[in-house]
Amino acid sequence: MENDDLPVGQILSRREALKLLGVSSAAFLAACVPGASDVIETAGVSTQATSAPTTGALPACVVRPEVTEGPYYVDEDLERMDIRSDPSTGEVKEGALLTLTFNVSQISNGSCSPLEGAKVEIWHCDAAGVYSDVSDPGFDTTGQKFLRGYQVTDANGQATFITIYPGWYSSRAVHIHFKIHNDTSDRSAVFTSQLFFDDSLSDQVFTQEPYASKGQRDTLNSTDRIYAEQLLLAVTPAGEGYAATFNIGLQMA
Image (cartoon, rainbow, N blue to C red):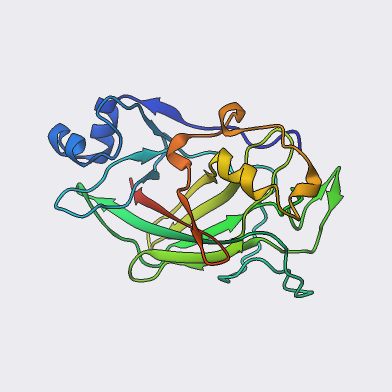
């Protein structure tokens, strides 16, 4: 697993971002979540990701970075909310419970609205750093489909998954891969990126089994070549595990 994915895209200036999003400078600065001096990062492709709307008249127009899908993507076409198990055996992967919710919006004419019917797909490694349905020098899980699946956003643009806190493998920080597919009658768009976790929280989770037996990880967010702060999840305790919500919007060209 030494050769994982690389970042794609470019850094946009504020003027370029304003032109892309089609909002005035005043509206943009009033609505943005980061400070006015923050650099805005984007994929530079026809489908762009931004944060979902906040309350009030103005949309939040924070552009998020896109990164490549990595070497372990498999198109399983597996629709389910709970992705912890392997469908063929029913075996459930052990780990700290994580409920992950996506709030997906569409940006049009400077405003945000819930995007219904989008396919949100996620995949990630287990507590030992292993992905399902791939052949790798360190493992062969061909035919297994644990920790993979998709949900379709509802009328509120929401899709929720039940999974486990991901483990780690050499050269990468802790992360979850995701794709958002939005197919319409005249075009098809896909946004691909990754979600990251606070290092201090990961340190805490990894003191527990089954994570602890893997030992000390070698890559933090600060040394990961793909990590972007705008992709960092805000994770909170929830019942016997954790919960996180990720707000993201799509602007169609």
